[in-house]
Image (tube, rainbow, N blue to C red):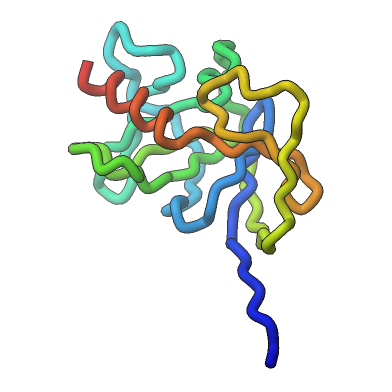
Length: 155
Protein backbone atom coordinates (compact mmCIF):
# COMPACT_ATOMS: atom_id res chain seq x y z
CA UNK A 1 0.00 0.00 0.00
CA UNK A 2 1.18 3.49 -0.69
CA UNK A 3 1.50 5.92 2.13
CA UNK A 4 -0.62 9.08 2.01
CA UNK A 5 1.40 12.21 2.65
CA UNK A 6 -0.42 15.28 3.89
CA UNK A 7 0.62 18.68 2.60
CA UNK A 8 -0.82 22.18 2.82
CA UNK A 9 -0.72 24.54 -0.12
CA UNK A 10 0.36 27.85 1.36
CA UNK A 11 1.48 31.31 0.38
CA UNK A 12 4.59 33.13 1.51
CA UNK A 13 3.58 36.79 1.63
CA UNK A 14 6.58 39.13 1.72
CA UNK A 15 6.08 42.18 3.91
CA UNK A 16 8.70 44.82 4.69
CA UNK A 17 10.05 43.26 7.88
CA UNK A 18 9.44 39.54 7.30
CA UNK A 19 7.54 36.94 5.32
CA UNK A 20 4.09 35.77 6.39
CA UNK A 21 2.99 32.17 5.95
CA UNK A 22 -0.72 31.55 5.38
CA UNK A 23 -2.66 28.60 4.00
CA UNK A 24 -3.73 29.38 0.45
CA UNK A 25 -7.35 28.69 1.39
CA UNK A 26 -7.58 31.97 3.32
CA UNK A 27 -6.22 34.05 0.44
CA UNK A 28 -9.03 34.99 -1.92
CA UNK A 29 -6.91 36.88 -4.46
CA UNK A 30 -3.74 38.88 -4.98
CA UNK A 31 -4.41 42.26 -6.62
CA UNK A 32 -2.23 45.24 -7.57
CA UNK A 33 -1.83 47.85 -4.86
CA UNK A 34 -3.84 51.01 -5.34
CA UNK A 35 -4.04 54.01 -3.06
CA UNK A 36 -6.78 53.31 -0.50
CA UNK A 37 -9.60 55.63 0.47
CA UNK A 38 -8.25 57.26 3.66
CA UNK A 39 -9.53 55.89 6.96
CA UNK A 40 -11.63 57.92 9.38
CA UNK A 41 -9.89 60.02 12.02
CA UNK A 42 -8.69 58.31 15.17
CA UNK A 43 -8.09 54.79 13.84
CA UNK A 44 -4.76 53.01 14.44
CA UNK A 45 -2.03 53.85 11.92
CA UNK A 46 -1.92 50.25 10.65
CA UNK A 47 -5.43 50.69 9.18
CA UNK A 48 -4.52 52.30 5.87
CA UNK A 49 -8.08 52.84 4.66
CA UNK A 50 -10.29 50.86 2.35
CA UNK A 51 -10.38 49.75 -1.25
CA UNK A 52 -12.93 48.31 -3.63
CA UNK A 53 -12.54 44.64 -4.47
CA UNK A 54 -15.18 42.83 -6.52
CA UNK A 55 -17.71 45.57 -5.77
CA UNK A 56 -17.09 45.27 -2.01
CA UNK A 57 -15.48 47.94 0.13
CA UNK A 58 -12.82 46.13 2.20
CA UNK A 59 -10.42 47.48 4.84
CA UNK A 60 -6.71 47.57 4.02
CA UNK A 61 -4.13 47.10 6.73
CA UNK A 62 -0.38 46.92 7.12
CA UNK A 63 0.89 43.98 9.12
CA UNK A 64 4.31 45.68 9.04
CA UNK A 65 2.92 48.62 11.01
CA UNK A 66 1.16 46.21 13.40
CA UNK A 67 4.52 44.53 14.03
CA UNK A 68 6.82 47.54 14.17
CA UNK A 69 4.62 50.62 14.58
CA UNK A 70 6.65 52.23 11.79
CA UNK A 71 4.64 53.18 8.68
CA UNK A 72 6.47 52.69 5.38
CA UNK A 73 4.87 53.79 2.10
CA UNK A 74 4.25 50.85 -0.25
CA UNK A 75 6.73 50.55 -3.13
CA UNK A 76 5.93 50.20 -6.79
CA UNK A 77 5.95 46.37 -6.58
CA UNK A 78 3.43 46.30 -3.73
CA UNK A 79 0.41 44.07 -3.93
CA UNK A 80 -2.67 43.46 -1.80
CA UNK A 81 -3.49 40.00 -0.53
CA UNK A 82 -7.26 39.84 -0.08
CA UNK A 83 -7.95 37.50 2.84
CA UNK A 84 -11.14 35.72 3.81
CA UNK A 85 -11.98 36.76 7.35
CA UNK A 86 -12.17 33.75 9.63
CA UNK A 87 -13.82 35.32 12.65
CA UNK A 88 -17.47 35.40 11.52
CA UNK A 89 -17.71 39.07 12.43
CA UNK A 90 -20.57 41.06 10.93
CA UNK A 91 -19.59 43.31 8.04
CA UNK A 92 -16.05 41.89 7.80
CA UNK A 93 -16.08 39.06 5.24
CA UNK A 94 -12.75 40.09 3.63
CA UNK A 95 -9.84 42.43 4.25
CA UNK A 96 -6.61 43.24 2.50
CA UNK A 97 -3.02 43.28 3.67
CA UNK A 98 -0.17 45.01 1.87
CA UNK A 99 2.70 42.88 0.57
CA UNK A 100 5.92 44.34 -0.83
CA UNK A 101 5.88 42.09 -3.90
CA UNK A 102 4.10 39.10 -5.36
CA UNK A 103 3.63 36.26 -2.89
CA UNK A 104 4.70 32.80 -3.91
CA UNK A 105 2.95 29.49 -3.57
CA UNK A 106 4.61 26.71 -1.58
CA UNK A 107 3.56 23.25 -0.58
CA UNK A 108 4.29 22.55 3.05
CA UNK A 109 4.61 18.83 3.63
CA UNK A 110 4.17 17.25 7.03
CA UNK A 111 7.31 17.92 9.05
CA UNK A 112 8.49 20.80 6.81
CA UNK A 113 7.79 23.43 9.46
CA UNK A 114 10.32 23.90 12.22
CA UNK A 115 9.69 26.31 15.09
CA UNK A 116 12.35 28.94 15.65
CA UNK A 117 13.21 29.34 19.29
CA UNK A 118 15.02 32.64 19.30
CA UNK A 119 13.17 34.36 22.11
CA UNK A 120 10.61 35.82 19.74
CA UNK A 121 6.94 35.83 20.52
CA UNK A 122 7.00 39.20 22.18
CA UNK A 123 4.55 40.52 19.59
CA UNK A 124 1.03 39.18 20.11
CA UNK A 125 0.30 39.65 16.38
CA UNK A 126 2.65 36.72 15.66
CA UNK A 127 1.44 33.22 16.50
CA UNK A 128 4.79 31.60 15.65
CA UNK A 129 8.14 32.15 13.99
CA UNK A 130 9.07 29.16 11.86
CA UNK A 131 11.24 27.76 9.13
CA UNK A 132 8.90 26.65 6.35
CA UNK A 133 10.71 24.48 3.82
CA UNK A 134 13.89 26.09 5.16
CA UNK A 135 12.66 29.68 4.74
CA UNK A 136 12.07 31.89 7.81
CA UNK A 137 8.46 32.99 8.13
CA UNK A 138 5.95 34.38 10.57
CA UNK A 139 2.60 32.75 11.14
CA UNK A 140 0.33 35.68 11.97
CA UNK A 141 -2.15 35.56 14.82
CA UNK A 142 -5.10 35.94 12.45
CA UNK A 143 -7.69 35.84 15.25
CA UNK A 144 -6.07 38.78 17.04
CA UNK A 145 -5.47 40.72 13.82
CA UNK A 146 -9.12 40.35 12.83
CA UNK A 147 -10.33 41.26 16.31
CA UNK A 148 -8.16 44.44 16.32
CA UNK A 149 -9.36 45.30 12.82
CA UNK A 150 -13.01 44.81 13.76
CA UNK A 151 -12.59 46.98 16.88
CA UNK A 152 -10.95 49.72 14.82
CA UNK A 153 -13.79 49.61 12.31
CA UNK A 154 -16.68 49.69 14.76
CA UNK A 155 -15.06 52.32 16.95
